[in-house]
Length: 208
Image 1 (cartoon, rainbow, N blue to C red):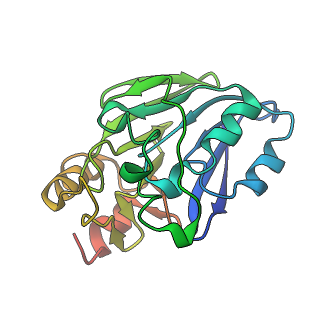
Image 2: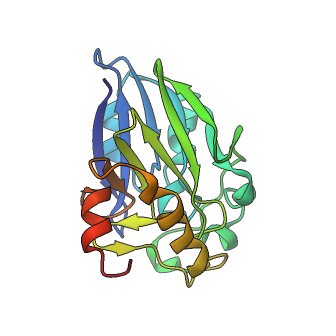
Image 3: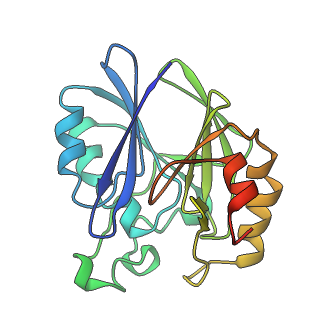
């Protein structure tokens, strides 16, 4: 089993996740946000096989370039947001200059899509296409028990849909038609805030 660690990064507390092998020698990073100093320190001489992005809003990609250059690892992102990494207007960093400098990175090496299975760290991660918060939002499921939902589903909340490319109907369809097909005991690791489960959100989330 992989070890899962959370790092709260940047001015709006974005959750980055480090998945690592039992021996601590290899890892995968999900959503390396802004000001990733604590994450960079943690990975040390660890071999990073990939950076996986649930979507390309600025607060989820702020650490991409630093870690990619440090570790020489590829980035995975859905094609619907392929040009967001390179465009501060599209990723939103130009909209909120008080939160930091405009963010621009080179394009992702690999495209994600729903139905894919990634083989990383000798394990399989399923990719679900879950648009609504943004047009290229995806969620990752590890070992059928650990879901990384980005900004689609939160503990007792859901992702905002008032940003460019957001769509409330798509978001609700992604949750009810995809994520809620998973078992109640699936652990949900969201892009902000604390961990939850599919069953808890199915029963208690006031937005659903």
